[in-house]
Each structure stands twice: as structure tokens, then as C-alpha cells.
Length: 276
Length: 234
Image (cartoon, rainbow over all chains, first blue to last red; front, top):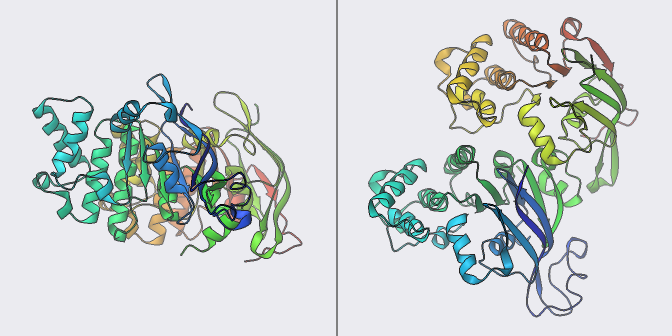
């Protein structure tokens, strides 16, 4: 299997930071706040590889650093230190040494992000179709007719009724907003998709259909995905491998069924046994 | 003929952090298997038979030993230490696991559930559906139900759908965890026939069967698993 993303020793410290930050935080200290300088260690020394076509879960409770991690990969935030390499079309992009224009380019065309909060991933002031069109325009598709056709097809694929294409997504249900976000993220054929708690807060039946849709799209397109979630069910249904985070550290990783059925770390054992 | 599977001194124990306790499940299991053979794990309940099966599949991290598997490409791989990505590849194309339980999302039709592993292997839709339909028919799932989701089925029907899916996917090595438990006699006979057919095509299997008559009928090798002196905690 070929790698698509290599994350190497990624660290994000909010606050002034001091030489002791990493030594006095983490699961063994039961905190992510440095007692010397008060900084919050959101992510510390995270390293992993995502392979082409793979669906990798990042699991942990709120505050574990899982969202911080993907936000950096999507350039929503900058790391304090560390590297990430995105292997795409024969290039190995060293993500954090690219200039801003190059980063935007990757973000707009080669990576997709679906946020828990649809207002972050969608422009609520333009129509659902317009949201797709916007991203297609950034990928240099300029023909109105082609854009309209593509947007229609994408929304159909994510099961947004064509009749609603010209409506504002702010008026949609949460599940429908996620569908538009997914359509938008997929629109440019990006090989890497980042999903941050995409089903959190939705009704159970809507959750199941969204998961189902994501799984189907993954199978059809072969897109590689990082799936951030606190929900063991999401991990079980979508992913083949899983990383477990706590206090910014990766404390365990393995095959998803192994993580769920034979967790090795004390924390993962607790997490798994506390599921309903 | 070469062995397809050589299990050497396989053991599994669990460390429960909460109770600071080590719980042994099984130890010292060794056996060899050639293509077309079935090894039955035999022993009282609680002896660790399922744990061994899961340790071979790597759902459980084995504590000791080796699980040497000969791949279709001819390589000898220790499944205990193989990289996770190699395990996922092998699971997709060569090694299957059949349980009594079916986890599936509510929207998929039965036919799609059964055809899915083939679609994931890249088999085209018609061929996958064709094979799925044959398996469902062989297990006597009425055709009227194929469009419905198995989420609405009875326990026995679900179990048969699950078995149909596993055998549709096939595999060079199949791990069977009580595939015939709780089935009626007709369904049980259908499943046994399916296992025999897969063996005849060269699939090697490791299985757990509650019913000793089935063990006598299907097994080429019997491996006795003793209950551990130290009882597993619930």
C-alpha cells in the first residue's frame, strides 16, 4: 500500500510554551496544561501514516487533540513543530513549508474537509448548488453549464433533492447540511478527505444514513479518509485502522476490530468498556 | 502439499488494567493445516476457542507464538507480527471470518450486504450480485427478502445472511466461529454442504462447532483446547 499522508512528530501548543511543556503533560500526568507556563498542549509528537484508499479513525474524548490534529492538516491552524507530507500526483508536498498560495490550492482542490459544524464548511449566504460551484470555480472549472451539471450530479449522489439546489443551506436540516458539505468536499475529486465528527449531533437514523453514504462514496471513489470521532460506532462502521488519542498524545493504534475488542492501553480499555 | 497454516505455540491472555489482573485465555496451541482441510477446535466452553480464532485473525493481539500463513503469492507471513496494512489486505482477499453475528447498516439490501465484500475486491456489480444470489439461494433465504435490509430479519435469517456473505467472499483460509449454532436442521445441513463445497475448492478452515456430529463430519484435524486453570473473569 502506498502512503498518501505521513504525519511526523506534529505538535501544537497554545500559549507561550516552555521547555517543560511536553514533559509535564500527557496521560501519565493526567493533564494537557503545562503547570510552568499555563500553555495547553493540544497535540504532542503525533506521528502516523495514512495509505491510499485507507480509512483511518482518530478516536478520543473531547479535548484529546483529535480535531486539532486534522485542523492543522487542513491548514486551519499551524503546528508548533513537526511535519506532514502529502503524497499527491507524484509530488511529496511538505505541507507546512508550502507558501500560503500553495496551501490554499491544496485545500481548495486536493483535500476535502467535512466539519462537525456545517457553518464552517459551507457558505450559508449562497445556495447549496452555489456552494459546490464555488469550490469547482477554485479548481479552475469555468463553464457555467459544466459547473451546474456537476453540482447537480454531486448533490444527487449525496441525496440532496434537486429541487433544493437553489435554496440556502442555512434553511436545511442538520443532516441535509452535512450532505451538502460532503458533496462540496468531494466536488473536485480530492484524493484525501478529512471528516471531523460529521455525524455528531444528528438523529440516530440520520447518522446511519450519512455513514452509509460516506462508506458508499469511499468504495466508489477510493478516496483516503481520516475520520475523527468520539463515537465507537462510527469507528466500527467506517474505519479499518484506528488511532486513540488522549491529552494530545497517540496512546494506541491498531486494526479497528482489535482496538475495540482487545484494547491494550488502560485508557482505551476504559473508553471501550464505557460504550453503551 | 505445503501447509497453508502453521500455528506454533499460540497463546492469548488479557491484561485488565482496571483490576490489575492478567487473565489467560489459551496457551500452547500448535497445529498445521493444508489447503482443503478443516481443523476443529474442541473443548469446553470458556476454554478459549473463540479467543484462539480471534488471535489468528488478529482481532486479538496474540500473547505468544506464531501463526505462519502461506499467501496466494507464495510468501510465508507470520500473522502475529505482520503489519496492519498487510492484515487488512489479506482480510479483504484471502482470510475470512464467519461469526454468528451480523453488523450492518440499515439501508443496505440483503443482496448488497452479501455482495459487498466482492465489490470491495473490485468484482463488477453484476458478477458480485450473481454470486451473492446463488449463496442466498443455497442457504434458502427466500428471494422476496433479498431487497429488504437484514436489520429486519430474524436471528436465524441474519445468521444465514452473514454466512452467505462470508462464503460469497470466500477465501483461502476461513475462520468459523460456531456458524451452525442456533440454526434449524435444514439450514444447518445447507451450511455444512457449503463448508464441504468450499473445502473441495481448496479452502482451509479453522472452526468451532458446538455439535460433535458436525465436527466428526467436517474436521480433518481436531485440536483439543483445555480450560485454563485460571478462570476468565466475565
